[in-house]
Length: 218
Image 1 (cartoon, rainbow, N blue to C red):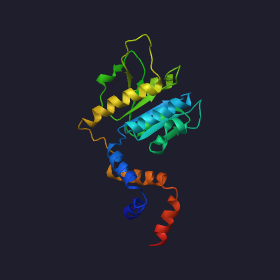
Image 2 (spheres, helix red, strand yellow):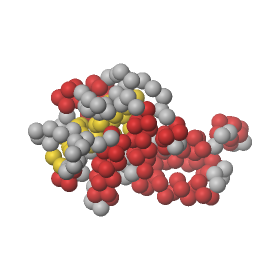
Image 3 (cartoon, rainbow, N blue to C red):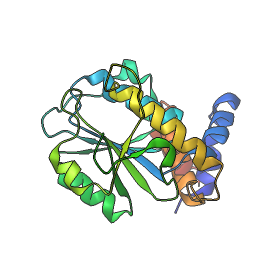
Image 4 (spheres, rainbow, N blue to C red):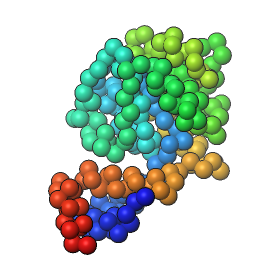
């Protein structure tokens, strides 16, 4: 359980602008949808996906790094990795098992004979959108366990979009529909408190010292 008195105390160290930003952002965060990337080679693509997740209120991002294990590009993510929870895996199997254990359906973003277009996607189900490698797309391992296949309709000569562009288009669409629905998509009250405390810890440079002083004064 969160120590609410500690939380109130820590918030006195925040600027009014930062506190107001937390107040505005937290109610729009969701775990109803999440995103997974599989062995994305170009670092800026993963970073851009994380940034899109932050922009559209997706709280968790799952990163599979079987082949390509790299540091998240801080410059391109522009700090968004502080506000989004990153979960990293060495295998697709570990990632998929964790997602399914938490009630998510696996959505493969790829053209497929059983695919559906974005406009027809059912936003009521907890879903993880999987995005694959730049040139190869998703692995057969993901395609074999996917619950459904999703594509963005395209009418030009180019047959695919950059992974970060695809993620942004899909997330903007599904989160917009989600917020207009009756689905209970927001973080629980407890989750919001936990995330508020986490964000404060990442905002205050002397967080540990401030917490220590608080408990010493009690």
